[in-house]
Image 1: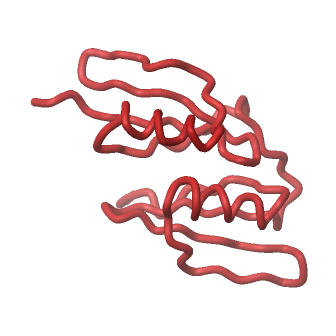
Image 2: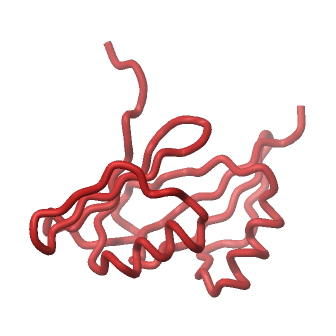
Length: 122
């Protein structure tokens, strides 16, 4: 009875820094959000569907090796890589070419791994 992925959650430690990365660096718009004191929940809905949520409500530590990873579909991988490198985003890989796609792995401001993915033209 599974229908879709509602959202992916990443742990954060510095709310202001994480917001700066997801809003200014990636250009996402803050959606549903709230806090209880210094504990925050931040959601970013994506134009094509899906949502990434950031929170410091748990004791989880941001990690590039935790096993989970979000993959953002992008329209121009090379241009985005150049733009993010100009903003000092750390990349863990160069472009990885597969039979149906190209991708690269970078880190968000908190150290979580993000995969940038572009399908090859049909």
